[in-house]
Length: 99
Image 1 (cartoon, rainbow, N blue to C red):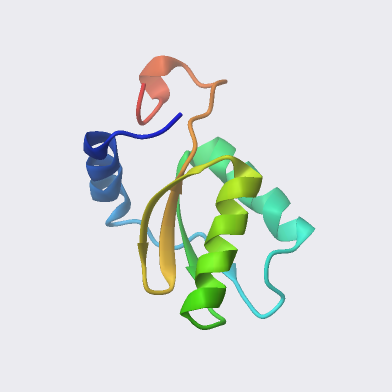
Image 2 (cartoon, rainbow, N blue to C red):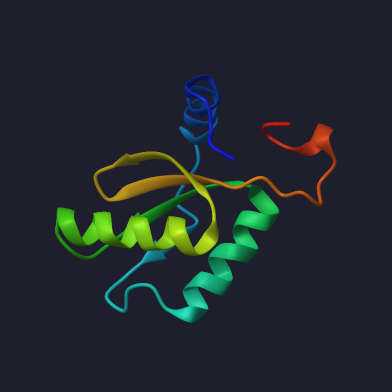
């Protein structure tokens, strides 16, 4: 499901006050990290992630790998922080951030 521009604007506004809940360090994207990330996305739907290592190209590659693996939508990427959204189909429509 591709997000519309308006949906991304709404999600960016919701994510503004969030703190990064996952940090990607020197070990990069590991299986344990992906398990935790998937679990967190299922619970919160909208999360902020910080990448502590690497240059711009490395961070871009990490973001692409995370988005592809999780099936989430990239909402925003600024510097070392990026925001992901993935709707949880198990939640009621009224509980979802974007129905």
